[in-house]
Length: 105
Image 1: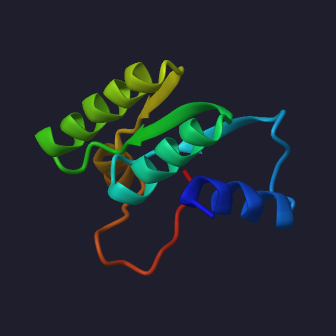
Image 2: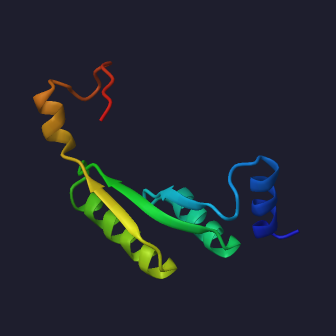
């Protein structure tokens, strides 16, 4: 049994979703979320991509966003991007790196 068939069987066995469902894949640009996109595409699932840019790593964050948008073109799917002003929010709420305070964005 190949990887795609194992992937599809696992989804069916675990009753994760129906093959008729449209999926929203959260994609960071890291290897795991990119592999998930590839598996979903090869398995024939209908999906769109969502990406959050927290703007914490300067140009690297921008490169991740551009890369994720290029995945959308590759797979011919919609890409939704949300940019967060994380540092500004943290400053306004007096949240400092390493603090124990949890914040719901």
